[in-house]
Length: 278
Ligand SMILES: Nc1ncnc2c1ncn2[C@@H]1O[C@H](COP(=O)(O)OP(=O)(O)O)[C@@H](O)[C@H]1O
Ligand SMILES: [Mg+2]
Image (tube, rainbow, N blue to C red; front, top):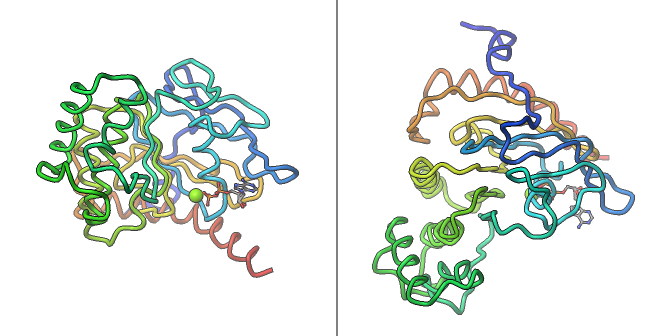
């Protein structure tokens, strides 16, 4: 069996942006007053690449994602999407968050239509496209339901349709499945992979779940414990697609990779726990 060192050599991959990056995060430092959350972070995401970022709680994962979305401005460094510097909220970006972002007073159909409404698409076209997207995520017949009349998994499907209907160049996901039970989570992860394979977009998935990162990603970037978090390593995930997220966890390559990345992540998680004890 390969030793950890050889596996790491095989999987290690530069994290930084290059000419082929659709999303280029270059030397960003993110600060809140005197507090520096992340420092000198370089991450590139290729066109159609599925990038997963893992790191201990509080290390700055959401902060980086919010910077890519244009919701926060870096103290230093730059971010570009498709060669254009990110300034303010980005139209070319779709979001999927952990918490329900659905409006409770709007139906599933109306919630899915929202992004098109903001973009000034006419009512008839909006409705037709929203119905088609609800069908794609398996919710035909649920168009008129309100969020409280849907299960957690169904609400997540509506959110996926809501994020993807605007055909974003980049999809940002912040712990999107962590509130779901394990079976629903696997279903939603497979669903997401199916939709992504149909029309590959660049994805940045933030998660504290290393299994999820490997099962879904083309690459896994590990961030260090905060403050002043940085990229520790980047690992290529050489697992074939299409993938079944529940089954892939039994693949020897998955297990090797998990062991290797965990060896890197574990130290950072332990540092975070040690800080919290002080
Ligand atoms: N608006 C804010 N003001 C002050 N500190 C913040 C703010 N947002 C996040 N932080 C701090 O920045 C660090 C990174 O936060 P966050 O990006 O949410 O971490 P993660 O998503 O990795 O758990 C944490 O220490 C957090 O307390
Ligand atoms: Mg977070």
